[in-house]
Image 1 (cartoon, rainbow, N blue to C red):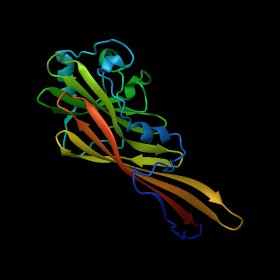
Image 2: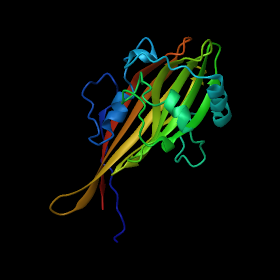
Image 3: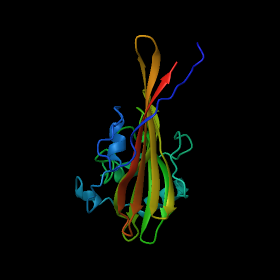
Image 4: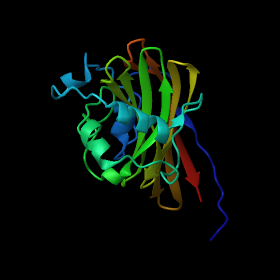
Length: 240
């Protein structure tokens, strides 16, 4: 194979969320970036689809604590689920399957492939608990969901999609984040999409790079607020 000579032609299409016509990556995962910053929040979890109370038992809470790691300042989304604790099916059936999502690209947490659900992080607040779970989507990536639970009655309060790690078919996204305060997560959604192309004389790769800055905050009642802060889109051509 000939040595690769790479020439980057960078065109910044959009540098701020104030620009409404930012070009989106046309891939299967496009909705993951868009929907992860939804601002539609129901008053209670059960109001989204059904009136189920979604209340944990004390044993459920102890299981979450024992099988999760203590949340640190850095967002934890591993590259694989190899070192995560699998969530038992009976726990999933009571507490996770069909659980409505307030912020995310799906309406609820599905029942498919229960062995792909794993415990991730845990943190205790004054009036509620926070824990996160990882779902391994076979088609692409590891999806991270944050869940809050009332201390008063162990009722699940709110659910939000908080980042992913993985890719498929030329698309890849590796989200990073840090908790600037106990209740504010600064999330960076960094992705790219490669597509082989050619003209009359040369072959090249068209690469689209997107970076989105998102702020995820928790109020004193355990409700998530997810806000898109800024975004940048870059078109890059790799010649060879």
